[in-house]
Length: 206
Image 1 (cartoon, helix red, strand yellow):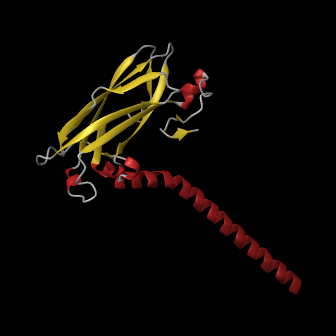
Image 2: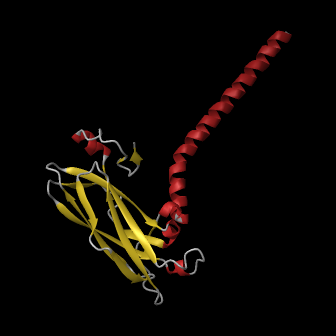
Image 3: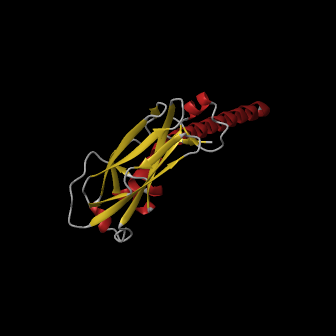
């Protein structure tokens, strides 16, 4: 009887241990799925890593203080495009809506699909830089020799002048990087070129 009772208790403990382990696994899986949107929310709220904000419209110029936005463009070697800003910089007042253009041209003799990522520097201004519309994270397919203009509209929150960490900032650099998509690179047999690529969700992959 004692042995049977011990076996029963052991079986119960094993079941409890198994249920606890399953619960932990379920929690960790759920946490992994939640991590991406939570991290994205954290970056957008804090401007971490130069992540910018999103908004529907600019509030309008507030005061006379001006800020200069510089534009930078890089193209991954695996993408046979010429990608450049069409203006080196623009100067606008805080709260005022700005408009700038980038240009992309396909230098290959076949259609090529690219996708872009972006950020701003200094990174600490990300929480004050608002993007209204842009071409980031949208796949762009260009025919051989095709050239397109890509607009971006934005504004800088007047609160940047109230923050002790950013009140001395007079210039912000907006940088875009274009990559060939994974799918397009596979089609073209271009994955042999080592380096990062960008998938459909705009996530870099090695």
